[in-house]
Amino acid sequence: MNATEIIQRLGGVTKTAALCEVTAQAVSQWHRNGIPKAQVKFLRLARPDVFEPVPASDTPHPESQPQ
Image (cartoon, rainbow, N blue to C red; front, side, top):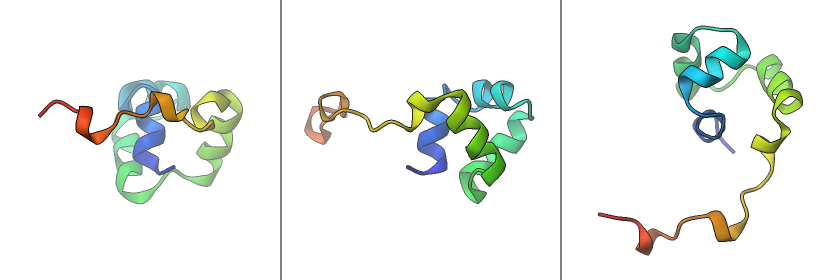
């Protein structure tokens, strides 16, 4: 799972920033630079559900996506 996926599963940049007590600008940089190790450890403890695999039934199929 990459940084963008984690941030999305946490509810977006603003919610992730509030949870981690950092600025939204810092979280935006994580999209490019990756989430710092200390923050990943914190997030795994605070929100373990985010790091669980998404069940296949919840994963949208490309052909069912609106265009």
